[in-house]
Image 1 (cartoon, helix red, strand yellow):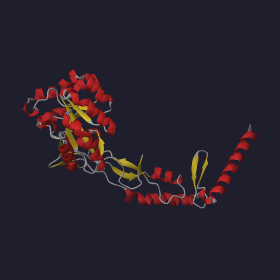
Image 2 (cartoon, one colour):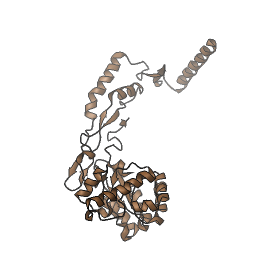
Image 3 (cartoon, rainbow, N blue to C red):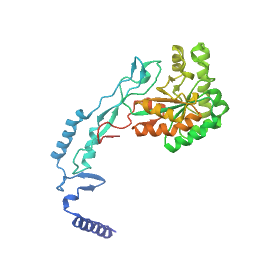
Image 4 (cartoon, helix red, strand yellow):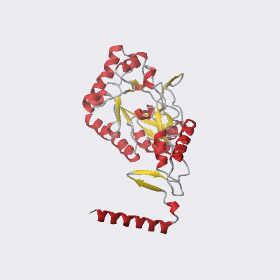
Length: 335
């Protein structure tokens, strides 16, 4: 058995030498693996000495601070009210060093990064309305408020699937109670499900108990029928007052409005909606729509326009989180 193993090793080494001979100088053979671990070598083919490894490590440490990006704290804006924070980036020194040892002969050190959360987060701002995500984050969301329009939901879901986009559906509780199968179909397609009150009232005209019940009844249905752990409330018609914000917060929800309104319920031509959305797009935008013929016809164009402009389309939770879409540093990797 040992003889066979030795012969196999010898044959393997011979094949490697032949490969090197046929494909260039030994200097092209730039890495060796021993006991499952990579051993770094210079382009000349020799392993790094302890001194060279220390120089490499020190170089990474020296560059780390200049390559960091500080996190952005959540804040209250005079116009936009609650603005989420955005994670920063710092060099992960140990992972960068290990990656460098496994990338011998590379022209540049393969820096690895990790995200650093802001000190002040969105939930720390208190009961405030949210109209948009952080302006440093090139992500937008499609908010679809559902209290009617069943006939348009299937084609909307088909478009979202074809475009590889997940939206957030804010469900009217009375609609959800009567249309559980449709709601489950939306959920099974991977979309986020959230709270749009129970009977589409003007929340600002309701007393404390009525407002509480409007939110609580729909929240109970989301949990019981869809097993949803929700964290957002979208007031019907965007109507709310200070009590609404506080009542939603008492139930673990933050109140979300919108940045751009398609006003699709007025039945504008799809082309005009696409132009409007394209012109007004900005990082962190929350785009309001409903299951209407206009949205059915405009949705693909809106998505294409956003992607052409470089926006990632995510759920409301994804857009309002402080997590980064991708590093801003060229060649950065976040683990």
